[in-house]
Length: 489
Image 1 (cartoon, rainbow, N blue to C red):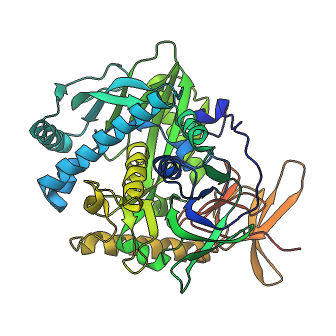
Image 2: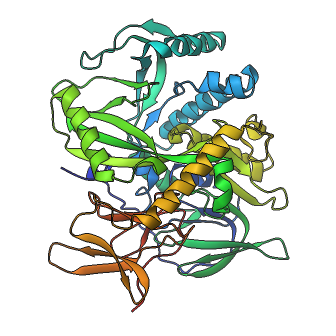
Image 3: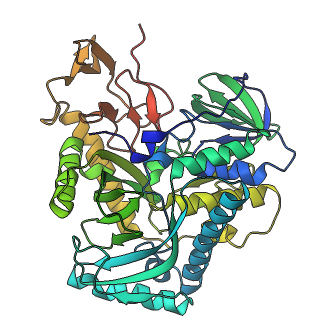
């Protein structure tokens, strides 16, 4: 079984780029996922010098672990927004998702991107009696927004029974990495792209430009777009005021009869379904990052669910992390009114394909001084209604995770090949590989000083507080951490 996403099986990043040194730029984009590449795409004709940096390989980050649904049927988002804000904002959010779908469709056609884009039906359903009113409410709202919605009592497959559901017909799926590499090809002549450069700090200079520190030196930029998964420059202690991280496990296997639809439930136990060619892709075990550190057990439970429903062993198994905002709306735009040239895009509520695309359009329009109907809706400076409950519970869970890692340094799910020991008075993480070599790292996340937990299945050191991940030698593979945990020799 492959412990990686199905999209990686034919991953080929063959775009040839000169390995230029870092130089000062007009616009710096941090992150080469769907957000960063979309920003570059919408800015490529601006005649400004644009640089895009990614800490790894383009197409090999968070965007590579998505289930790649291009969809506006997103759980109970519209009634959540109506409750938190008003119906007008619910409709505006729907419009933004539909526009994102159209943008992906038009870009794919214009740039001749072969990404297996396919129009399909999408289902939203429940198997819990208490959630039937929510399905009905979401259907009523969508009908009120002039969306054609059907009511169903079954899915196109018999393996997953449902109590009640709805279906829409104008949604899509695609191969996310093929799309990203298509975007990359379309910008390669005008955007300097540099891979495997880790951005470590952003500093506003007196002249209004930004000094950016990286693993390969420093550069300055007039404008900075932070298009990475987690906004690493936000003080971590403040983040529970705004949102939290969740983790989802995904399984995939070939099936004899593939179908052409997506489905997701709104129940306490996640079920997410889509097909890619002759593969079935199933997501489950959605949990807050702070609630479970035994990652191998969660993987096993997800695989067992797949086997139970579909009577097949998964061939691919991976996990994804999503940033969830307390008010159900992403942050897209200027974060600080005192720094008008620093932009952010994050918190996509697990719907990164549409929100990452619309983020690129919004930020591009802001920089180019164009009107955009969604600027205020997604603005990080928006007025948010106070809600003390998620602030309190998120903060408590972060504190619990932080404390637990200090007192339970060698949890029972750590294998005999991974341990945490003091070396010269320093807590170190030790992993012994198959040939007996010891890989020793600092067992302390540079982001907020949480102790790290070993992910036995993927052989990574993971932070249960804010989701930073490191390989066995201590290199950052996912932020918000911006420094490695290597032991200096």
